Length: 480
Image (cartoon, rainbow, N blue to C red):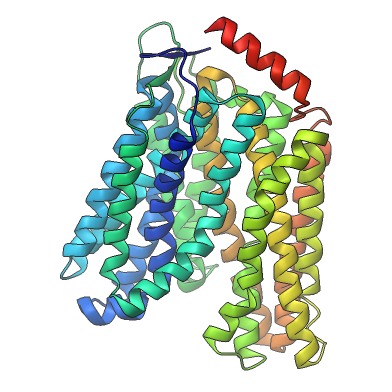
């Protein structure tokens, strides 16, 4: 059961939703926009490309390493408190980037931004669960998903425009503004934390094993192709990641109190289904790198033309998120998750038809991206709601952290694997065959995601009939 330190009768408001969405958008402003402004940053600061690539990857690395930790701390110390900490770190990190004259402040700023994302993502989901119920919670999570799933596309375009007309540092000035607005908008939200008994003992042993494992895994994923997949260093790091994972699971399962990750969460089949399918569907992001690389190398598109091909994806994601929410309220979460994944699968698959002539293939890819976006948009809210609704009240932050870590790892795995498959096949065959093979890899991810939903998510999850919603709202009012 949740307990709050202030008004127990508080119910979530639109102001709270907007504040949380602004908080989530700050993450995308510095995460996604940074990828698009590499030449401008390199020219302005005079740093080499290697240092810049490290700075870019550090945000996702630190976010991935600490997101579960931050989620667990949010449950224990307070979800609003950890959200505020994340926003303060975001402001500090963005300010360092604005003031940067070389690589030092750039790298420190990116580390702080990674820690910021780790705090904001799980804590804001947990706040949504604490102060919204039934259909209102599903609506709130839809807007959270718009900030998260749609934010990547919106801030990619916005970041490019800001960098072109105002200068790249203005991106991070806007990020500071959004963070300050988020803090102001959620200032009236009471604190929410899990009701616990016994003294809290932080799991330093689990954290140490987890950081070493995640560090090794991230280096393998992001640098494996450059280091060489069969090089001694890559193989050693892969072994560290595998052994570390086994050690971490065994260590955590032996802990009786306050483990870093409570693996009992995975005894809940809907939560497990949502998390695994989320990991696999995020891995389908590898399609973006394969398709964009292929149309430029194999079809002679410019980077701008390649970007415009995928604009339908952004529009479709944003348009379908609330639709997915409404479908879930009528038929439950399982069907829109299945339908969304199936539509994504079809959209990805048709992009692999590289034997088509130029005009027809261009149309096919454009339609494929739209279907990709429609599917992800339909899947987003039902999946997030299933994960949140299935988690125990005193573990929502931790469960949200694991769910979001699955997103980050899935995305990183998908891009790394797809890029490796494409480049390996291209070295021995034509770019057409390489692109088709890379796309087939992502079709496999989609199929596995579909199976995980069918097997693990039951039919009755997420149903929200109006009569039941009204009843639960009245009961909640009576409890307060």
